[in-house]
Length: 469
Image 1 (cartoon, rainbow, N blue to C red):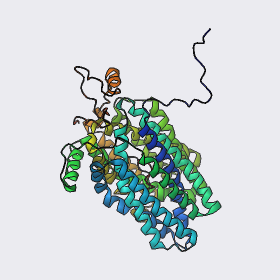
Image 2: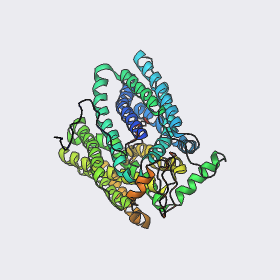
Image 3: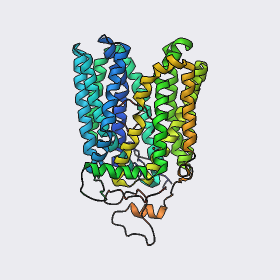
Image 4: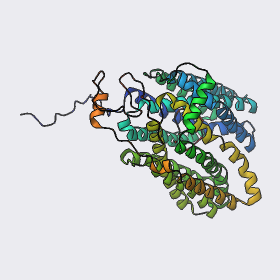
């Protein structure tokens, strides 16, 4: 007598879904490892500055040292990532991050770290991030099968967000137990492991619609691709302000309100943890929910980013603040997955990294300006008024973006199961009458350019900038 289902042998490994290919597994594993290290390193770097005798201004200076080269080199990084194999660019950036963090750790452990050295090494990390992010995003988008993009992007972001939460908790404990220098050393080791994993990525050749030309020509092509889509540049302009004011309220006003009115750092730490948990919950939600109008659903969720600054202005109880932060985290993740789906569907594969660099540039350029002006704005207008201003700008810009027809109307293009199965078989004959899938991965491992139509953290960058786009 035979059983209907044979028992699985004890030593057999569980089978992964068909869409989780080798490249996707390597990208996700490397991003989780570096996200764990980076989250702890952000805490370690701040305490390294403080333990060396630095002031709060010095902590901000070192943190800002990463953003400037990031903004300066992002567009060049995007053009380079569409010109060279993206995995090689990612490995080189990880090696540079590993070296800078290793030197940083050595100086801190030896007790000889000076402010200018820490700022310079942080700037090296920001430079590496500028080249890493466009290559990473382009690689991820070109790796995922369109039929399973929603689930794949959700799994990737759940892994990264979970690692960020765990890394922050572990990093804080390790800084207290063994000191910031050793936590920075762990981060350097994480970058080394990630570089090894990413060195095994395959099929990373990038399509070039017109081979040749210089860097300026590449940037112009990327710019034309960027500005030709109102939904694309409209949302990037929106997030240039939304990211800036949300970061200012989170990094500057939140700790001050918590210290003055909520009982200290504990309630604010709880609120940040709730936000992180919300991003994980949002990723899990997006594994199952597939809104047909992904940009419309995502943009409506951006209104939730107005809630935390409003709650801080009203000084709601700590439990209510944490609940609102959790809801905001869920909403941000719904937008994040929808944005990745839109890029994956609409942007030609050979221009993904350049378009991504313009997206990143717009999304982070105003962050240091907003954080620098947060203090003067509070002194001039009052903290409550400044927070209401942050909330109002989120609502105003998000409402304006909803006026763009393409944001409301861009729809998910479902893929035919027959076409998918044929595309999955190398050498399979084309199906008569079937058109190429937008952004599909062909048997040669290259991304098929999408037809022109009417927006992490890529992960493993070490930037420490929590942008939604």
